[in-house]
Structure formats: structure tokens, C-alpha cells
Image 1: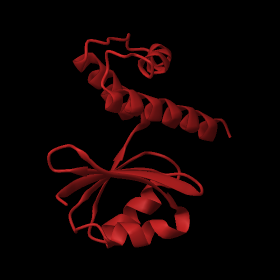
Image 2: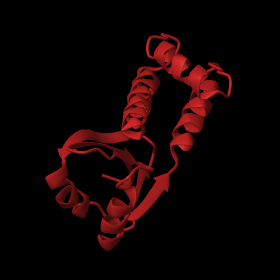
Image 3: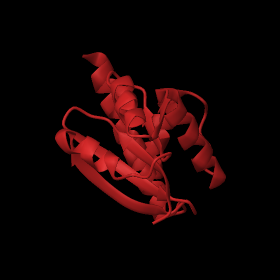
Image 4: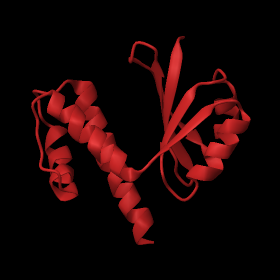
Length: 139
């Protein structure tokens, strides 16, 4: 499997990961319990890029990943919104630059039959991630 990058959604107990091949196709999606994350990461090839959104534990995990020879990348939460906005624009779905407009748009995009299923799923995950971040920030 020609894995080039991994996206990981850090959480308190269950982490979601998405493994991407060199051609951009999804090789694997799975959920991992916190105690199994390091073992799973250790199986990735050295130099593999692992992207995660900034949160309270992101730097801790980035250090652990670097110790395993991986290339961790921490992205600000805004990056998620801009990437989603850009991806949707590629399919002709345009939303204003406000975060509230994009959040409403993500709810619509999930059901927009003009979009490929993978994009609709991604919109759903992005919506969930943003809601999760909102909850963590509010605490």
C-alpha cells in the first residue's frame, strides 16, 4: 500500500484516522482507542505525513509521532474550514467567508446529490469536527 499521509482526529478516548494513498484515494478509515494509537502509528512508514487539527493535546501527539520517525503537521482549526470551502467550490458550491455560513453550508452539503459521496461524507465529518471543537473550547 503506497500510503503517503494520514489524517487523525484527536479525541479523549476514540481517535478517527483516515489513511491516504499516493494517488489520493482512501486506503483505510478506522477508529482507534487512545491506548492503541501509538502502536498503530508505529506501523506507518517513516516519513509519513500525519495531519491533525490544533487542540490541547496536538503538540503531545506530534512529539510522539516525531519520535516514531513520522512527520506530524498541526493545522489550525481555520485551515479545516478553508479547505472545506475550497473543496466545495471545486464542485460549484460556494459559501460566504463567514464560519456560520460554512457551518450551515456543511449541513446542506451532506444531502447535496450534486456532490460525490466522498465529498458529502467529508462535509459530514468536518461538521462533526467543528461541533466537537466548539464543545471542547466551551469547557
